[in-house]
Amino acid sequence: MTGKWIKVIPFDMKYLRDYHENFNEEIARYQWPDPFENEDAAREVLQEFLDEMEKEEMLIFSIVDENEKFVGSVEMHGLTEECPELGVWIVEAEQGKGYAFDALNFILDYAHEKYGKSQFFYEADIRNAGSNKLLEKLSSDYDIEEFEVEDLVTDSGKELKLKGNELRRKTENE
Image (cartoon, one colour):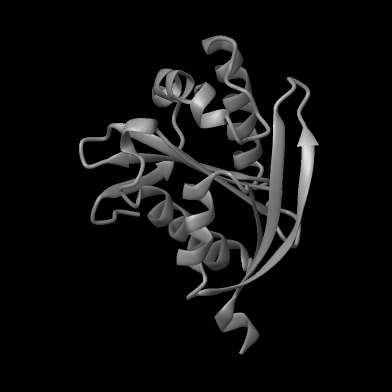
């Protein structure tokens, strides 16, 4: 996909260092996963994601700007499930430019067109204003059912206040 501002392309290990360096404490602050301990740990997890993508069990895409500079990642886990889970993150310096919204639209449309998916799960910490604004923007094309906030503590001790949301394509409901 080529948008006005970004391209969303299948993840390639040439972006490993950028992914590792930018998925930092601030980005992971309100997410279950923690930053990677080192580049080798990042490589191992990302290779697992690529293997799952090859088996059509998940999707992982890089978000790059017009100069092919890595600006984030958009993922869909549980692709074989009825309601796969969405994830997106944008490099700190690139946030607030609409990249996450464009990338989510891309992956949602891609999953619908290629796999017939019309229901998706999106979870965000209630303190993550940017992630929650994305839901508002998606509400024109999706019916969104909000779930109760769940207070969780990760293995590393982060305290999260996660609210799940189920998105259903409006065209599927009419």
